[in-house]
Amino acid sequence: MTTGQLAIVLAAVVVGSIAKAVTGMGLPVIVIPIAALFVDIGDAVVVIALPNMVANAMLAAHERHHVRDTRDLPVLATVGIVGAIAGTLLFVSVPDEPLVVALLVAIAGYITMFFLKPDLVTSPAQSRRWSPVVGATAGAFQGAIGISGPIVGSWIHSYRLPRGAHILSVTVLFLITGATQFVVLLLHGELDGRVTATLLACIPVAASIPFGRRLRDRFSIRGFDLAIVGMLALSSVALCIRTFA
Image (cartoon, rainbow, N blue to C red; front, side, top):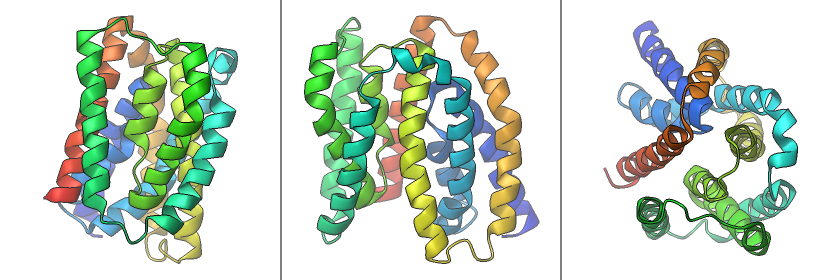
């Protein structure tokens, strides 16, 4: 990776980190498609893995006092890990395209329902019943195609939690899957030759996350909801480009 390419990646990391701090998601969604225009997509995925973990850890630590307002986190995390293992083992020979299409349809359905029925909320009773299914599905998609963010983001958003509890929920779940991904990359030697770029990318993350948190505080409740739905839509576009372009 040249100095110019690294500069472009770091600039994308700043934008992605701010979006991450505002909505709880968006760092890989923004950085990887932009970086892939200038560097190998494998480089982009590996370089952003540790900075994304840092961002999730910073946000989760800052919002930890909202833990009592969260819902179903232990269940989602546990079955998500099991689902990820199953997805890796069982879906390795399944083509990505049908799974991606199913995911895109689900996201489009959720966004449509958000605008048609803005007061629609997943109740505690409903979330307890369906969280094991959602967690396992998110884990399976993570294991099969490396994508679970849109599922996690839309499901947690349907709870309509206070924004601090929402951020805590999604970042904890992303941190767990991200840590698993990072360990796999490390064991497979994927960080060889990319350590410097990975560590440098952590610097703009650490600098941008506090600014993004302050920006989030300026959002109204409706603005926060729209920001999350916008990030879900952006995730869909990025997923389409990654899979079908």
